[in-house]
Image (tube, rainbow, N blue to C red; front, side):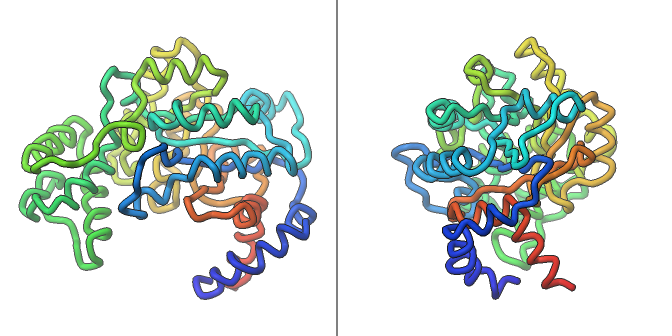
Length: 345
């Protein structure tokens, strides 16, 4: 499939999109979900597409939302919630728009676009944002610390319960991801202490706040909620849940709901699994989301129109910086996934 993808992206999907064929073959019923992770804020220059590739430009966000409004039935989180409760039907080609992580640019740069297009989104926030100074996502900061060149393999033993160093046989990104998985096995407070030590060993010069990297604080989350956007939970600290032991995994899920409800004074009914793919969560995490009192939960992979029966495993189309409107549509309606499945057979 990887050899065919450039052809699909550059020729097949644009032709089908502009000809209206993708919309015509979209299977009606259920709800498709598209998911963002923020936007590139004005004045920010990207020097590394690995992390920045999860964000989109403000111009692309506007274009994509306008397309969805003109060609599909964008529904608000309140309508979606009534649907999963069985109390309201959805339009035949319903789409819900979500966003993960709770970066500061969600409020300052994304929200005005949502408001201009009259779209209400569902924003998944970590419990870290229920504080005055949440900093940034720890695994993104770890990426910068490791990139700085100031850390030795020996230093990274702090992030491993057994004192091992990250497996770097696949290069820097593999080493970083190995460290993220190891650190996710630690209790959150132990990981925080280790990150503080690693931070002290680096010479600085890293951008760890601001509209690109910073997380919203509690007052900013309240502003987002008051603007009409819905807020969901995204764990307390965004670990790889599959690496957490049972107690820590349950704490991450349950306490994120409680922290946001305390901060906002309203029920939090939706949950998004961090990273949200089969390697980072499974049946245990689904069971915990259900038992924590959430009404639904979302993956960060897949596409197509999910039925209500997928209540705790709703698929979402993950939007990236290089995804055209045509490719977005092909993923969102499930056509790309169907092609993948056909190739695998």
